[in-house]
Length: 283
Image 1 (cartoon, rainbow, N blue to C red):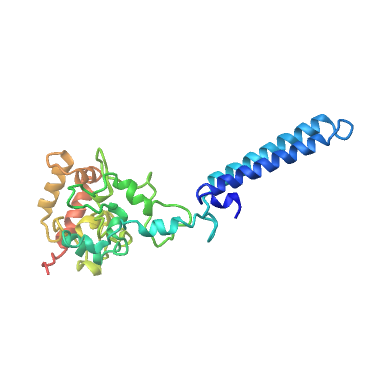
Image 2 (tube, rainbow, N blue to C red):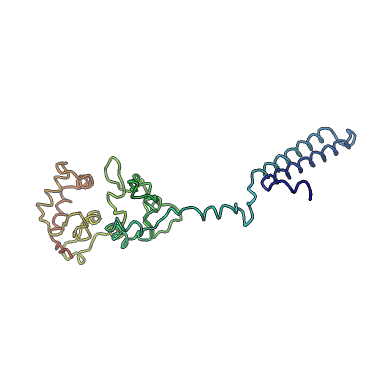
């Protein structure tokens, strides 16, 4: 048994490194003793000494800093695998949210976002809701544009916007959810198309501006969720309400901005069109 066999496992790499450095220093000293100024110029000798010292320092740093398990299974630290496996999972899945958010879950399950798990947008919090922290994201524009910002190479079938060209509500802090339900966003390609006369059950052609109305009030004015029904509304009532929004007497940031962008002729045209539609009875 050699004297080095009694060294503990944690100190053995350091001891081996010191032995190797000592041998390298002795080798350099031996080489220098056998070199003469006639055999090799002094500046070459100095350069070799400097190169040797740099190599020794690099080798010492690598041996000291690199984990012993590195490259055992590949180009990573092998001990990291069991460490990660022993950690507590952060994601609990959308089924965990269903208990308290059944209404949101119902909208999400039938919407185009049903493949996006709740924690992708809301983040993780294993103590929620016991810790009382809200998981509603404040900056929704930044969140939504993570997937919906128009960039080269993104699939064309995925809805995308150019921020500088997208019509945001005239608010101090405009947010995407003002116009889009994040749990079940509407198909904007359909919304951008004005309904034709046959589909709406009227002989009056739909004004082009109705494509914007359809985003919140439905393709044929049937109303969407809390947004009121426009189909069958008397023209006088329609015009009066639009003028109230236009003058600011009736407050609604989205409707006020929209009404101000319309002329009196366009408002009258919309009023006649929606009057000609038949309101659908709720199912």
